[in-house]
Image 1 (cartoon, rainbow, N blue to C red):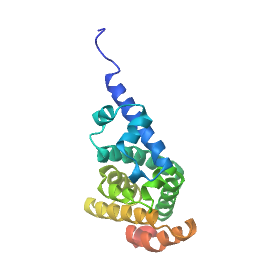
Image 2 (cartoon, helix red, strand yellow):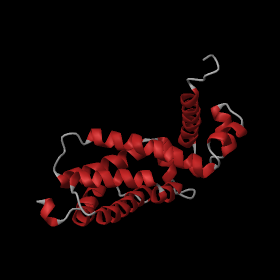
Image 3 (tube, rainbow, N blue to C red):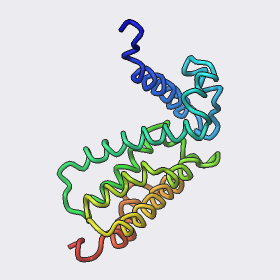
Image 4 (cartoon, helix red, strand yellow):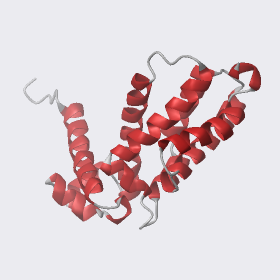
Length: 193
């Protein structure tokens, strides 16, 4: 039993989280697209070889970071929507609170910085986790055929990333745009009433 590493799986998870936490701190300081693997390794206190043992390349690290933060943001948004059951209001408030939550995070807002290539939109489009979470949110308001939910989710992710890269003047204007353009497209008229 002495040779059995009962912390083995957890140790890998802790190491990966430590690396992602270091990346988070760097993303809060500068545009995510400019952060290199050597900087992340240094901030995490590990060698580049160790970093590459957990994340084979920058894209894998970015994907792991985005997925971790997507789950966190999804839970934060659903907590903020407690008591908002009417589908129309739930859609509007869910989008507005999600936009606010990303913008209030210096690390996440750097993913949509326009000074560099806004890598957040690119990863959001490719992420199966973001797709699944967005579909779950849509189904919670208005169950529909799976292919319809999938198309709506892909479109909703594009709208959200567009607003993150090209924001409205303020939250009220974005709320009005969502109400005027998104609600009619996402929620059929029969479900709005």
